[in-house]
Image 1 (cartoon, rainbow, N blue to C red):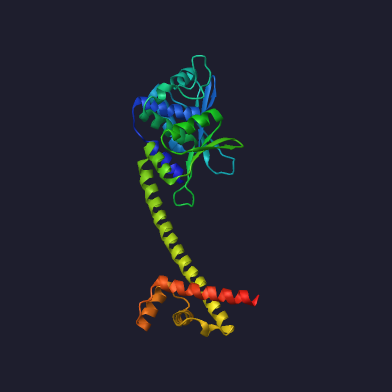
Image 2: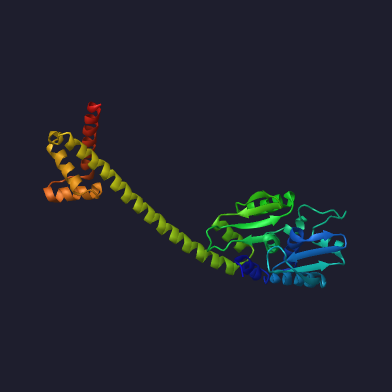
Length: 311
């Protein structure tokens, strides 16, 4: 079972008030149903979602939907559950705020279905059941998306999410629109919003683990980069020292600078701080890192001067 299926299984058993059930069913129907005057058809591959939809109609309207199974020929072996309502369709659609008194399809649901935060949560829960999908947090990408047919409804859903701080965005695809969230923290907030609490716990455990691993990797990368930078810097300094020697001008350096050059060649892989400590101990004199840096800069300037004169 995919992570999305696990989430849908969990939220398909959420118990709430009648008003919340109405909002949830409205989200399900408006998002996914094929709506005709005398027929409402809902299709889903998820048996828990199918059971939820059947149960909501039975609970709210005492209606038993017609259920059938058909094969999915879209390169998948899953069966598709087809649920159909063939009576009282106008009454149900008006009750769910999907059509108005003129029997016209509404782009956004009736305000009464979203009049408080709990109703909004129920509505979004219904939308996710039939159009949402979520990557497993163990994968490389954090990604939650909803596939929506029309632009007006996609914008409505996007605004509904943004008003709750989800930082969602819309992408136009060949077949409809994708409303998506990519931030791990926001995805976790959404799962909490739709009351998928077990999903939140699992998601957070994996997310925290991945962040720890990434943090460790970043530290290792920084440490490796520092080592490579130290080695490269030392190599250039040694090349300058060797160049001065080749030109027979090494003895022209001041005593302390010449001493620093000798130690740099002797300890080619040490950092300036380590080198300053070595020189301080072996010469019984206090040589700081900044002092060492100054002397090495003098060596570079001297080497550059020789090169300029050669030209």
